Image 1 (cartoon, rainbow, N blue to C red):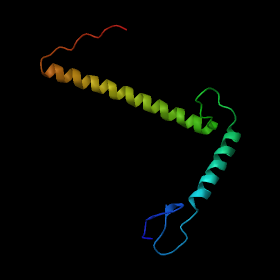
Image 2 (image 1 turned 90 degrees about the vertical axis):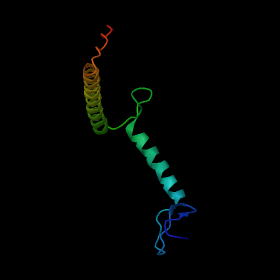
Image 3 (image 1 turned 45 degrees about the vertical axis):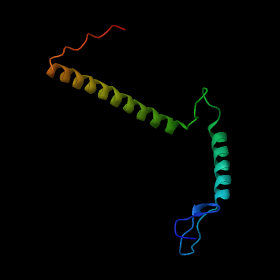
Image 4 (image 1 turned 30 degrees about the vertical axis):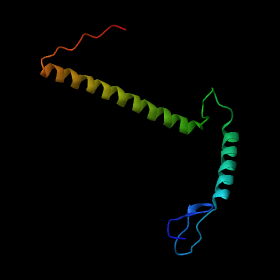
Length: 100
């Protein structure tokens, strides 16, 4: 088999005849066992769709989510300012905002 070619059990086989690693069937089995152990360790989800992440992960994910929300709001604000400026440069008055 040529270097990088897909073997019958998953990962590519090296050309030099070295051990290609764990067969795909073993990887699948170990992955299933790991997922099972992980779901037992994390307990029941708090709500439907909750991934039941351990607390440190949940804290980091919430922090990342907050940063992304701030970035989106900043991008929206900058985009609106750019459009307003472009319209002003063309001599077009932007429409008044509609109240919610």
